[in-house]
Length: 101
Image 1 (cartoon, one colour):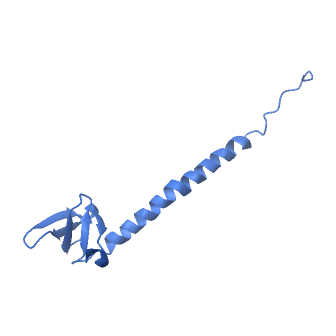
Image 2 (cartoon, rainbow, N blue to C red; image 1 turned 90 degrees about the horizontal axis):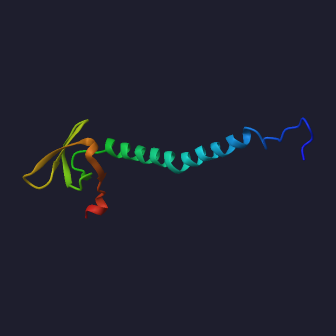
Image 3 (cartoon, rainbow, N blue to C red; image 1 turned 120 degrees about the vertical axis):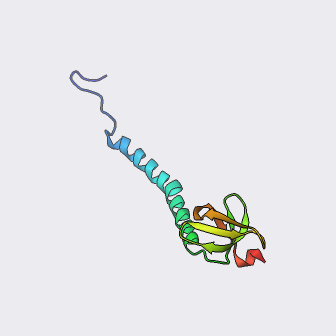
């Protein structure tokens, strides 16, 4: 029993609430935010290194070779006759020379 005039303790106060919250934020950062930033940086680097003649794949799955390229637009040669115009952000990946052969 408690003596008259005493109150039960809070059991650690506000620090016991802050520590789990800080741990959750740190885990969220290292498992989700940091890998996504790294992936976005690699994608931006790949898009900036594209040049005429590179073989690419669009986000829709179309395979082609870059015929013309500007800052915003890419013209793809799909076969000897067909050329298609895409936004530069529509490129999913560049096909490496080893994969293409």
